[in-house]
Length: 110
Image 1 (spheres, rainbow, N blue to C red):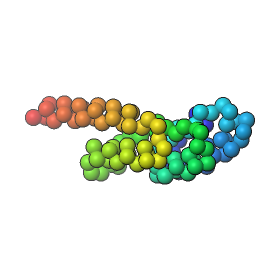
Image 2 (image 1 turned 60 degrees about the vertical axis):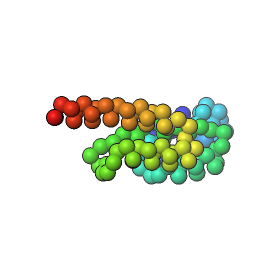
Image 3 (image 1 turned 45 degrees about the horizontal axis):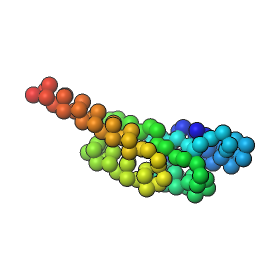
Image 4 (image 1 turned 120 degrees about the vertical axis):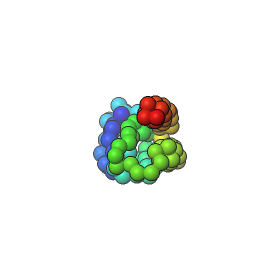
């Protein structure tokens, strides 16, 4: 991978993948959701259509408001619309684990 960081720093992998020698050693780019937006993946894809893009990290926290399941579903939709190759797999696993923890916590509190 040429990169493993936030969408708002997508200029770095563009620089690496623009170098023909460096590009030979990279299958693509890994991204995180903590800064920027999924559209950065399309920008990268438009410049380097043969290179893969994977969302490799996006966790929740106290800053997330609203329905976590809806937020994760929107993340899956937006990243796959913007050329992500496998984000839904990891996110689906995260949703299942989060749901099981939440159900267990609700059961224990009752």
